[in-house]
Length: 103
Image (tube, rainbow, N blue to C red):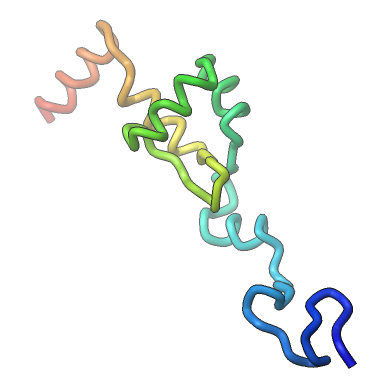
């Protein structure tokens, strides 16, 4: 007798054919914390009001924080906050930097 999907004898499964009982979202949410939501690249672009291509370029160059889940790129809320902080310029940025350097 052979398993219909794998052509392996019944009961014989390799790592690649074994089914995983864990849901990927459950694993991710358990490791991130309750309040740290994951965003797709298009959701992150909408939230940051940036073109998707801008995010793709920077993730490819490893210049912004992101998560890589296989071939999928994801961002956490803290990743988005860090991106905003890294890329902000102007008087507000200078005030924050001055306050942090004096402290």
